[in-house]
Length: 340
Image (spheres, rainbow, N blue to C red):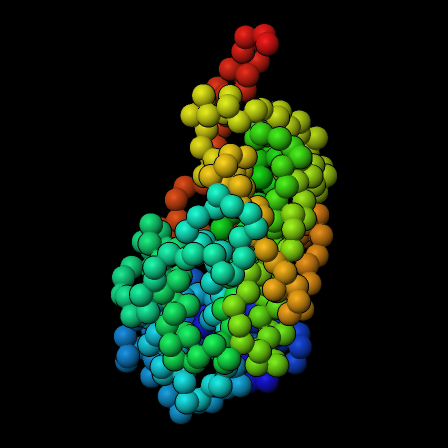
């Protein structure tokens, strides 16, 4: 297969490129050459899809499929899809479950209400506040040009794995590797749904190879680990001997600790987020999604970090992780809290 990957140098894009090369496909990447080095073995093309002129490197070329894991601005995705409509018969767009508006019911399947996206909306890729609406608008842009049968909309959940540019699992690994007592949030039995980036890549390529369109939540069909198991896996992978100190959510809130941002992957167990870790993966499973154990993702991510891997977050992403001084203050408050 002649595959065009938009981006292709970091995290999901890199995983798609690596998997495609491993399957023997001819891979061309199209990017600005700014985010990272292209994987060896691809044909790199340079351009910027924010303008019509920026797509000129694609003129006169043909591909069997396009994989677009990097589209953040609907107008840019629409421009790309239109430019390739006559030269590539299938378009796979990697979206996100963040397109869903509400998380107070479970399970959340593909029919759930999404943010109102606009297919031709322009804007700043670094405007994180518009991320959900922009991703939905990008979905609509692809569907507008390709139609439902020739377009894959892969709504990925919380992604982990090597070459991570989000930083959630790497933060836990790095913090736990430092040892000592570690603030751990809520109930260690709280279930999570995590998907390895390599499993996302394999699913996207499976659908592209058979040109099978559709919209899928690319998540495990059910929780596949717990917060406690994740932390324990980080302790085991790093060999640090760190000690997690599990604190109830009410106490963490009283100390001003922010879910997700300061303690990555912590989503409070409250009615408003009842569906967050209860996204239906039944559709993707039926379409062939295969998922590996989370412990394998943890181990491989730590090996990547140890070998010099560095998290390069996308522009506009909010700061991540609990500051050392604040963590020590929270631990001290926990130790001196009133009995009972």
